[in-house]
Image: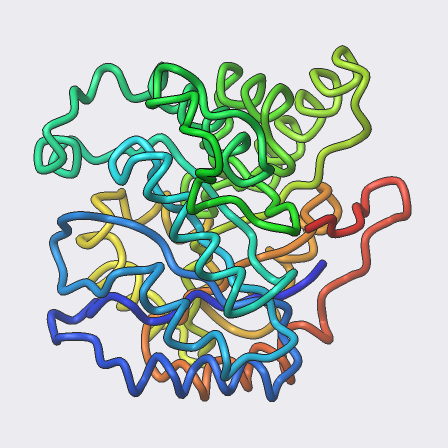
Length: 317
């Protein structure tokens, strides 16, 4: 199971996030041998926020060898043609190292700002995925998005190397069918699932993929909030006073879903995910990111129990 880091694009404590800190975290991820850096997408949020794709572009040359991933970007709000052009720009900065994590969006406020009906998000998302795949892989532009284009005109998003499309879902039956039908991978939300639910969803995803004649589709966890500490009281405070209010979740429920606590406790949670078929985890330290990544690599990951061959899945970017 690979480890990746979410860039600190949000000020959890209300302070404005700094780009220099983002660059520092990206460099630490590179030096520690992590697999990727990631960022996600909102138009509005309850805490100060930096734009995700912009941050990935800012660190692209500082993380040579690491993948740049969105976990996730929102084509329904940004527009599939516009977002395809963004990914093509990232691919020019980091050839062969871009993963397009895409989601339908879950914030009514974001949709209101984009002047897009919230209750149409899933239908529009299905269409947006198909349009982005065509644009990024050189297919014809559908008439519903302004095609066919004049002779000699190519979409800005057209790339020489395919960019994999990983689709986000909290694990609903409809969401997993969408992944099996349209996705190159599945991104689950760490704080909206559990290892047991993740394992059940992977089984469902395998079944749906087999029905379509596809091989097993890899699965990963995004937004794994992380705080490694030897102080159990401090761990409770991070969940109760910081994460739960920010995410609007019950603290007791949230405590069992995030990588907050002792190295042993964090390793046990990750071991259960590894056994469930998780290929990669995107960790998001709540603060002191560089020090937390060092603890993750030196104290937690060595304790993670390797998955049985039947459970493990190779990362397929």
